[in-house]
Amino acid sequence: MSVTKNQLEVSEVRKTVRRARRAAHVLAALSGERRNEALLAAANSIEARSAEILAANDKDCAVAQRAVESGEMSRAMFARLRTTERGIAEMALRVREVADLPDPLHRRLSAMELDDRLVLYKETCPLGVVGVVFESRPDVVPQIASLALKSGNAVCLKGGAEAAETNATLVAIWRDTISAFPDIPADSVVLFHTREDVAEILTLHDEIDLIVPRGSNEFVAYVTEHSRIPVLGHGEGICHVYVHEDADIQKAFDVSFDSKVQYPAVCNAMETLLVHKDIAQRFLPAMVVQFREAGVEVRGCPRTMALAPDQGVIAATEEDWKKEYSDLIVSIKVVDGVNEAIEHINRYGSRHTESIVTESHDVAARFMEFVDAANVFQNASTRFSDGFRYGLGAEVGISTGKLHARGPVGLEGLTIYKYKLFGDGHTVASYSKGRRTFKHRVIAE
Image (cartoon, rainbow, N blue to C red; front, side, top):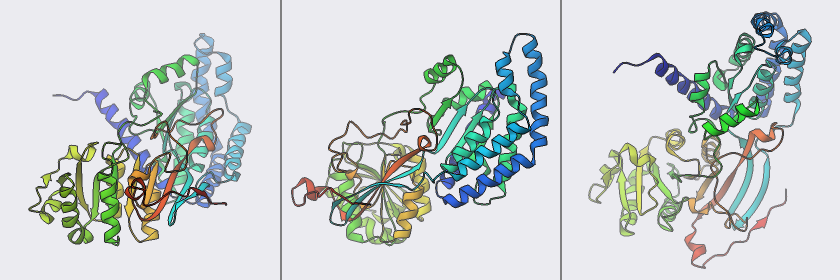
């Protein structure tokens, strides 16, 4: 079967957005100082390359002038399109103003002691990938790019055709500038060009976290009607527990068992267990026995099957890593390290709840920083992801979507938060059976 040109274009759109998503994971871990350095460098580049911006804008305005004369473009839109030396200076000034704002990331919003050695933190973090579709004004490019970088987000831009040359030049300047920073991916800002690109972008609800349409009411309505981005609430709950090589074996048994068996029919139950190869021999055979004795069907990768040859482990398929069982079924995969575990979770997880069992603060911090999920735990069952257990009183649901901003969307509107729970082998079973009770003590800042 032949592949059409349009199919190739759609494929390139998805590839580009995926590169932006990988860039977003890198941005989320950058220090505020580093993000500010890049912003100030971008402001300097905008001023230094003002002649390029003006030349590109002249090309756009020459075409737009004919559209105004023919009645295809309003004079108001033409005025928004035109930029000047002063306009470029204002672009640079606004980027510097964004750099001067307080860092919106890694702010602790609350802290609560749920019980002895079980402490819950709520901290700000980026949304991830933001798509912005806008018309006419080229100054939107540095405004949005600066807000995105400051808040640790990657951004996918699509401007109006009337400003194509100016937008392309501004994005090129921005990408050239951040390319001088080896730890900041150029693909943290990408530009799309056609209506077909927009149509494809609106379908990428698995890659883009927020779409911001800037234009007429009709255009906003069109985007809302034709896209599932963003989705408030959650669909599947594909949760993971990762047992690192330095895990306390008993904690690993307890957390893994509780996450799967305590109540398997709910969205915060574990579906996939990931195990470091260097602890697998000591941990997995006994863990599989525990699961089997509790009536759990075990599906495993080849290395898992080799470690538990007589336990009735079924060969896992690609579909098992994507499956929410909501039942006494678990899939198990042996991985080479924490990076592979994070990659697996970010690929197959539903951004719900993920837990790591480790005695290393540094490894736990890396896992919590790079895993893209609403809830990330250390040494605690995924079943703690619950409004009551968090001390919220109750819940209407657990949202893995990220629609939350009202009014003007600045830095705060481009951030969300995640819960970080630090435990010591705690399990929900001990609370549900009455052996322990929650303290829910607010920790003062």
